[in-house]
Length: 184
Image (cartoon, rainbow, N blue to C red; front, side):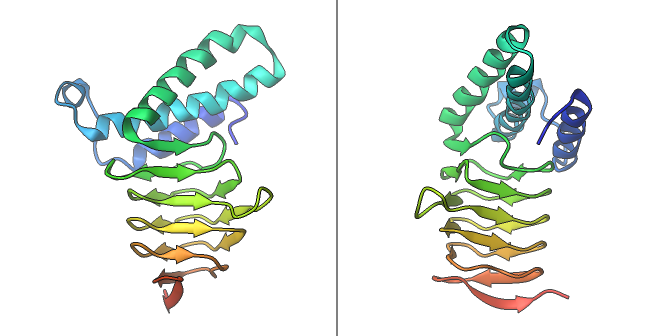
């Protein structure tokens, strides 16, 4: 969770590291998806920061929050992404914009997460919590349903449906998802 300006800078720096090249104005002119994804993540981080400031201080930060919230929502509609603020740790990477991505407010994902198109985190019940560790990678169309705990360094294959807890260093796939192997 982003508490201070220093945390905001660290989160944005970690997110930048995951991109091989920071998008430029040429990427915007050419409508490259990398520019839109990068700015969506950037505005998400600013929304997280100013949302915390609004709870503590009030009206001064309202205009900054509204600007970043508007851009975050607009890019989300354009890219078909729904990632709630304060759900994903630093180092988020989204490679493509093909299918929708949904990360609900009942999800907590650690650092250096990679999401491919079609990843959905969904709750069966309103009080279900999904907890994901650090350095996880989710393949195309992966679905995570219910109250699930996923360990660190986990790779979830394409079109896998996860309904049970997954230990650290696992590679899983299938419907329903089963452990294929444990990484060394």
